[in-house]
Each structure stands twice: as structure tokens, then as C-alpha cells.
Image (cartoon, helix red, strand yellow):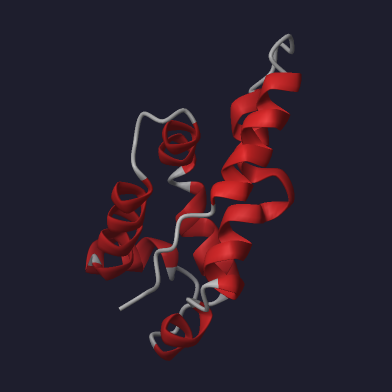
Length: 108
């Protein structure tokens, strides 16, 4: 079972960053959730998803590829339109899906 502690401080930092960029014309919300890879880094390293995922041939690059397909989910979480538990469930479901794994592991 992967840990799923919600990173409230990261969420606050992302909200602050997004609020400072609201006047921009480009996709500032995506930039906000991807700033410094804080969310993937939190899951991979701080919650140690790395250890069990590496046993299933996941690499940091594959993990980032999978996470990139969930940018809108991360934006919805920061905007309080999706719970952290739902984000985690969506990520875990994708990582277990054999069809999606082929996409993430393409070129393995």
C-alpha cells in the first residue's frame, strides 16, 4: 500500500504561486502544479513510492510521464474540486492498468 499523506504545505505554496500569476495569459495553473516537480517529488521521495514502484519496473521518468497525464487532476486538487484521496486513487488505478502501463513503459 502506497502512503497517501496529503501535502498541505505544497498545496498552499502552489495556490500562492498560482494567485501571483493570475494575470498571465499562458497556462499558469499547469505551471503552478508542476513548479519544481514538487508533487511528484513528494510522492516519489518523501512518501517513498519509489521503493515499491521500482520493484514493478517504474523509473522516475516513467512516473513523471504518468503524472503528466494527471495535470488537470492536480489542478482540480489545488482548486479544491478533487480530494487528495481521489487523486491518489486515480494515480494508483492508472499505474495498475496494463493498457496504460504499456503507454508509460513504451520504449522500455
